[in-house]
Image (cartoon, rainbow, N blue to C red; front, side):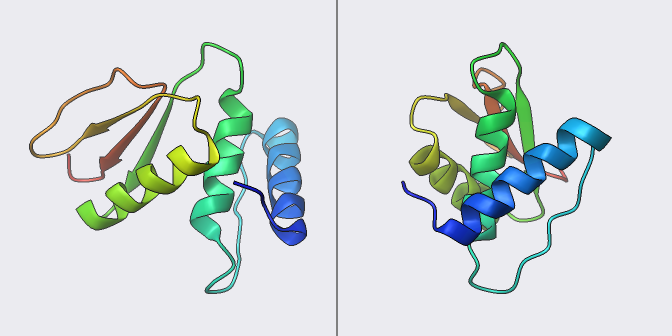
Length: 100
């Protein structure tokens, strides 16, 4: 999936802030593609390393949406889900609800 120029800039600035400060907060308006941009940031941060990541959401629907869009942006990075029915930490990126 190709990012729009403003999304690329958001991702670059987020990665730079994470490298510099070890944390950051990204703010974007409705429809800007925050899920896509989060997916690109997470993909760049774990890159070709052995690192793993967990992406938390507060609803099952958002967990599924995040995983689907992450897979579109990062098709070579494995994913898994921890929810009420699945408890798999096998993926490099695991999607879960806060409650689980």
